[in-house]
Image (tube, rainbow, N blue to C red; front, side, top):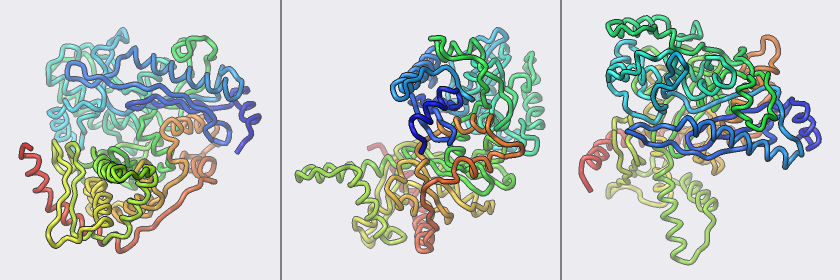
Length: 534
């Protein structure tokens, strides 16, 4: 750990690196020093809005939020180090992936920002997936554009550029219409050989809309794809004033390719190497697995994106994870409070989670579903949280907690089984991060059993995407000749990382498989619960 004076000198000499990530509820800035550790941060809370049946963010709020986040960082640096921020070695911008920001030839926004959260592109998603023979999720940018074509929206004829949120901000800060590979892969399918948008599919799309007579080709509308470490321009005078209206921030700072939150999550968990991946488990859960080769066919359950370095990644995303589990722990908290016991929630979670490890490997015949909302992987548009048992089930506290931990990853395992069993994907390790892993060793063991793969949890995993994009910005200016992103992370960032690894327990693997047989059969019970009004 470097001293305050050493950190202060790094900031004063403009050697610190800034990363900013725009998440769905918070914008966060992280400043890292020369040993890649966070030394200051700032934040700004915001919320999306539902306007005219569209989930969106006001453009004014985007810049208000960015300025507010930067101002909070600057204030914290002044308070902690007695330094006024004026410059950095590099800057990186990251944001929620996907969505649709479309501009005309005067660079004016044509329609309100359509975020990843919208599910209004079903027809486009289906038709493009069939055309490309490649799964196109509803939230992808190309699905939004084509749905606008299908809807006959008059703005489509005027589109001259469309991009993601990170690409938009980077454009306004640098004047460059570029996008990092990971975020670009959520706009349009990538060719992992060329590390660029797939040329065959670009041609297919142009053919699909040829009869519309649009004055553009799809290639002309998309940003230029850049890999991690490539030149993405510098902060302009106008960009510096957008970020810091006080005028203290200087122009000319190098900026790395803008990235999506999936790419920065992979970077922050050292999961960009082939045969590695990460699982983020909280309210929702998703897994990212870096592939050695393309899948043999498209699957609706699996999205294909890339790492910031352009390697192919399979993504399994599920809407539900810990909400039902947390609700049951909340019920136990209410029970203890009724008897006058004041138990700390962290202690309660830890005790109940560890109790689950005493349960039967197959949960004693118990069954549960954590579907607060729909779950596309198992075919549900709506959900009903359920707990089910037969008279023969071994109903005790350990099995009760274990089944709710198992089912929190049930939909994820359904998708991961496609990769691991049907596609024979090989994984050397997965990194776990998020609320499910806070109780040491429990969520980690459950996940290892679910996917039959070693699972690692690092102390730094909680630093998040703002740290991840700061690392990508640092890689831009501090990598050695020929040093790839994997080597940079291994040798310069995570070489002294503290954490723990856990191999799958054979009894857990076998027990989870038995549970999943029950889980799959029981989906009919979940379907009946959805169909019946209560």
